[in-house]
Length: 324
Length: 276
View 1 (tube, one colour):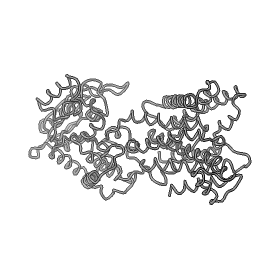
View 2 (cartoon, chains in turn purple, cyan; view 1 turned 60 degrees about the horizontal axis):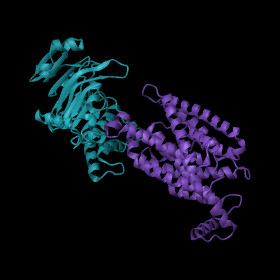
View 3 (cartoon, chains in turn yellow, purple; view 1 turned 90 degrees about the vertical axis):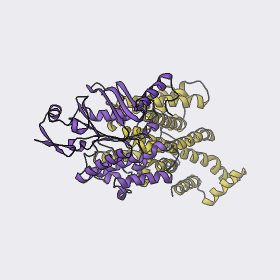
């Protein structure tokens, strides 16, 4: 069922746009593209314009949802998410600094590592700031993440504006957008997100054990500290790569794992892969909305996810208080 | 074997352990422990928990009973002294090999909301499974036996948050049994249980010891502790008495350690402690 939902979303996103196409045309273009013989403008639209964008949205959505489910599992906190923990903003800041001040080295050795290091430093700082005598209270974690994240976002804007002649088109990057998606982005992200999916499924039992509390997880054979920080580093890496490619897109990692948990239960052998699948579908749909709702004007997809995610977050925050 | 490839001192420890039989035991050697920026709660305790024995730990609140269980299981790291498992320091064991030998039922177990009883008990098999390895028929059978023994089989598909305190406690006991441990450490296992299950948990602890497990139980009720083979009495982080209950339970000692007068009568071999 989940796979069907993703397929339908992808098909819809390929068909809908400034030039509407019939499902048959989309299918035909895909088949001809695989055969290497594109025929006409419609085929070009499907194969060279919409497909890279849709695939990139799906990849980023899967990656962010995986990162979200991993953060939520290791912090045992349904509100943990790459955006709320500051990882995304940290990555954005690192990427922006590298883009503006860096040498013109390839993306994978400059922008991506800068984003990763900055994101990891931000998460580490957030955890240190939020820690209260060995415990990590939910409210202080989110507070530290959001405040540090806002400061870093402001820093990113400052860096970008200070060098505005070199940073044309960065506003949409700042807010998250797939408008400039190309095959190079895909080639960078797909292997990483696939690795994250395998890693996440590999770690499912560890995620489950942590839900029984850290002492119990340790007594059931999990090397807790090593496991936690490996997962945090991995999830941060995926977040950083996504942000470096398409900018800061918030709340995907919050909404998707949460919805999957409600629908399919909290056990991670299902939660992890289904989060990836629904994360992909969610972001493809959000991007479709981003480019069609105000067409021909395009909304940054980060604005769409924030419009959905903000109220969702507040709802979770309220519900979380009741049972205590 | 874990630690056998280590340095010369390690091998020597193993041999020394085998010589006096402690290679078959879980043992504390003069361990001390303090929580960060807190007073010392265990102040030099030595004890041996052999296989096939039920050892009860008693003492007033704050005597360090739970800390002793934490040290013996490796959840707490001693600030001085050593915990030795089968002749090898516990800290040299990886978490998984340690979890195949020692299982703990804590005082207040946290159960993950939304997980079924079956899934929680299945966590007990984690030390035997690789991350990708899924449960085999063998693992499923072990979990079923553990759930039947603790009488939670009928709740197997119930989400754990719907269980009462006593039922939840038995689920945690089932999870510990599913670990197929050599040592079973119980921290006040009867606290949340009604009378019938208190007696059953004690019966189970006795039976586990008879079947060859080393069982250690922190017990509040001295009359429960009277069913143990050996009793350790703790006071202010020190072991003040050790031996069979008939020797350890002495009216004068209980008054001194617990600060209350009791009368001790005999029921056959077993002492019965009556508050007066």
